[in-house]
Image 1 (cartoon, helix red, strand yellow):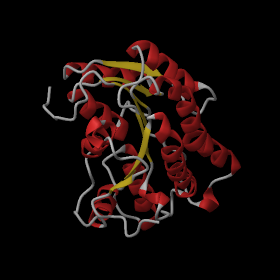
Image 2 (cartoon, helix red, strand yellow; image 1 turned 60 degrees about the vertical axis):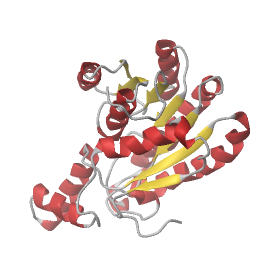
Image 3 (cartoon, helix red, strand yellow; image 1 turned 120 degrees about the vertical axis):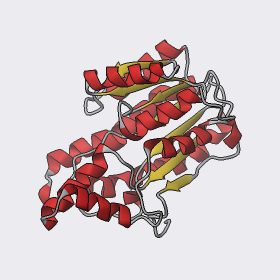
Amino acid sequence: MAVCNLELEGFRVAVTSSSAGIGLGTATVMGRCGARVVITGRREERLRSSVEKLRGMGIEAYGVRSDFSVEGEAARFIRESVNLLGGLDTLVFVPPQPPGGRFSEIGMDKWRLSYRLLVESALEAIYEALPHLERGRSPSIIVSTSVAAWEPIPGIATSSVLRPALHGLVTLLARELAPRGVRVNGVVPGYFMTDRLREVAEMRAKARGVSVEEELRRLEAEVPLGRAGSTEEIGWVIAFLASPRSSYVTGALVPVTGGLHRSIR
């Protein structure tokens, strides 16, 4: 178990969209810091494999299969997490990835699905979690969004339009829940080595007539640090925001972009 000095030992943590990508990276870091974690995903086999991976590191981890495109599933995930952990101290909301594509390529069905995944499921999870968080230890909510909320990215129209709503949610809840002892913060990821980044690279590569690997290199070259991040790099930022070490931080939207973002609005 890593020594991280974030005072997360025994914390009860639920992480959404966490059988892979940023969610799994976050669960890994928080688990290595001593937290007890529940992860979720749609694919049973991958979820089981991720739980086994975490347990192989000595992390107390559980898996709850869920599909956030279905109404009520986000709330059920929270209920089952509370039952498994005996309460809840931290909710990390990583949205399921919405459909990609340019505005002209997607129809209303995909917009409705994207709203369900990005916004409705966040509200559902938070409403269900809040009574438990208020009884928790150093309770907090951390919401992962995207740099597309600040700088719209062609090809992921749904994210570019809907993720700003999550920024508004963080700002609103930080003020409303502070008197109740619950901190609310957000992280704003740039390019991380995830399935989503590869999907964007595949779309761009097809349009440009180049290989996916070449397009991935071009995407990484856009980042001032010259590379995409690892999921555990953002996991450490989220772990800090969840920890008592950040007890005076609420309402923050922290860019974790390698310098990719050009402005904060």
